[in-house]
Image 1 (cartoon, protein in one colour):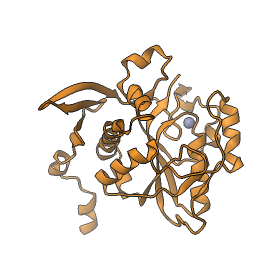
Image 2 (cartoon, helix red, strand yellow):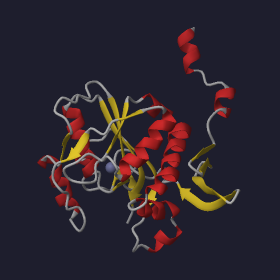
Image 3 (cartoon, helix red, strand yellow):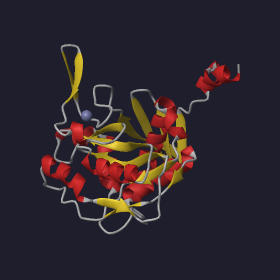
Image 4 (cartoon, protein in one colour):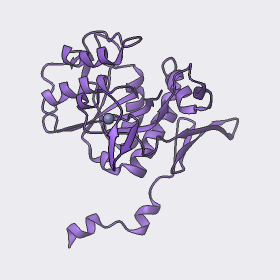
Amino acid sequence: MLSQLNTFISPAAIYMMPLEIESNRWRCSWLEDKVKVEYHRNDVWEYRGDYELIGNSCCTVCGSRTIVSKGQTFCTNPHHDRVTLDRAYIVGKYYKTGDPRFRDSLLSQHIIKLKNNHFFATPIALAMVLLVKNRYGHLQDFDTLVPVPSYRGKSDQGGQATSIADIVGYELDLAVEDILVKTSESKAVGMKAAERVEMIDNGTFALAEKSTTTKGKKVLLVDDTITTGSTASGCANVLRGSGAAEVSLLVAGKTWS
Ligand SMILES: [Zn+2]
């Protein structure tokens, strides 16, 4: 009888789902297809805009656009088969600054600003928390959050992925472990997707300390953006090599072209 109770969702539990979350003067509200973003200043909540959620027509593993043909769904990412994540959990689409859609995408603007100003980690992280709590509740049972490092030779301490992961970890009561280092610089900017994928096998990432183990753990990588999935896959390979049972990715934006 007890096990049956565990799987039963009472109407009260549904009402307890957080539609709104607040931290560090930012407030995000869950509106099913978007997240409303507000900032508290001069005693009022200023409406900053909405993060549009990515929708269902994207690949659950790498976030790329999918197409349906003869009743079957296909991922359009030519490197999909080399993505080693279990799943990617994505807030919304990320348009680059040159894209005309950038101007209307608050999420893209905040992701760009985050690179120089960690102030913007808060609304992005709160939107991720709302996504987890309202749509992917099982992620709250993961063992640890691991930020994807941005710079060579060190962990992501002080980087944008860590600034997001710290807030998500606090809100979801999950440990944050900065256990990965980037061992060689990814020349990702201006590099063709195929070349980036090649780098997966070249030891781009490693464990910060040899003694670190993720044996049997469910690991949720955290990053600001995903493009082909090659960077996150490089991390996933290292974590699986140290025994991780599951490696998925929680990310703010899927680079969309
Ligand atoms: Zn895919």
